[in-house]
Length: 210
Image (cartoon, rainbow, N blue to C red; front, side, top):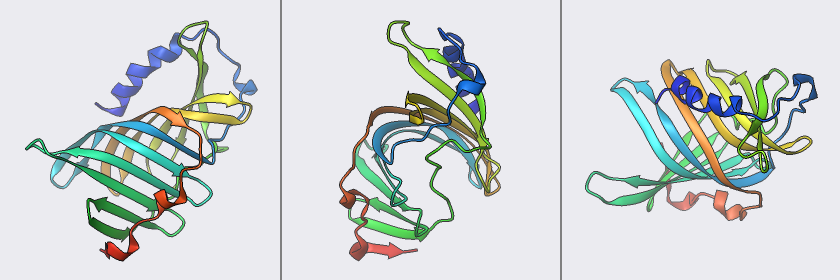
């Protein structure tokens, strides 16, 4: 599913809002310093081998103070077997660790951690509510360009208190390293807590640099 198709799917939800806020009343909010969640990833990208499609469910950990993230994905093989693929990204040191069972590979990366707060150049696309009028969920949709790339990002958040929010959905499309990519990320089961720091520590003694 393309990002444009994904946005077309979720835009009607925003249009079914029970109340619309004036843009000037919106406070640019920030995510928690630490949180974990499930993330359903759908989309695809072009490579030298042709189009590649992505459809997976990920356990996601964020630790903004140390600029580290962790993702865990259960990979299903054609023969019915499964294994756990884990990635730890250390944005402060520009290193990423990819682990499959006892195998670990460490490599360099140039990416920066996603900003915790809505940036000053982000454009507010819409603000409203979805769900039952008795128990609505407020949604803000922001549009911005990821610095240093041609990727356009649509970030949907729910504000929990003035200046504080939680992620709901993110969609992005554009060219990265010369290849077109279109992805949608649906966030659920958000927990605000401090995961053990060991969660973000890779097995350095067994990792091979590539």
